[in-house]
Image (cartoon, rainbow, N blue to C red; front, side, top):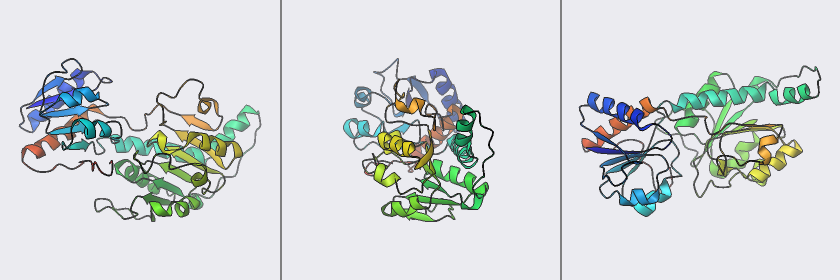
Length: 316
């Protein structure tokens, strides 16, 4: 079996060593190929991060493509064009859920403890203790409740903040125990009206692109906070800046952007109530990811369907 890896951001030897190790543990014989240096070598499976369309189109015998991340919006259009009918399989957690929970927990505490207000007071050299909102009324709303959202929501609930969530269907998933109020996307306004910290963890699809514009975000209560660790293009950036300027939104913690890296001179860089991180909320970990990929390949080799297959129609 040949497994091609296209990941220009990670040293190939790390992927090769981890994949070979986990394949051996499962009794699989695998030859791992660095597709960035051997693009013409044909493979049975591919493990990719933002591969070029021409390379995917040239892989004529692929049985499945594994995406190196939870979000598949970068590779999905290429699959439609180059490999119709070939399964696209995403990573499920693989160590990223805990990272996302850490990131969201820090952002929620930053909002609740009014740290943006204290930063402004520090700039003004003012010593002024502030009153905290009651924890029990500081509702944290998760827009999107997949693997990452569920891990983060569990952490926030364990910190005794009230949690609510909004998903496409508003229905609980059989694999998740989610004892929180769930709203369908067509009741987004009602969901937002109760949310003090909005945690955006939606995939990027035709339905979610530009979803959070001025009118929609205005349904948040005045003084609400926004955390986006899903996809940048879900939020209309100019509208978010307008709402920050008016004080309707008190602060934003942003890990993702419509254009990455965030361009020099972008007004988000210098906004006093915006915190920016460079798409690091939940990074792919080589060891856990390699182990999961090899388990899924073993499942395919047994003639069974692996979990994590992307619905190409829905986009996630």
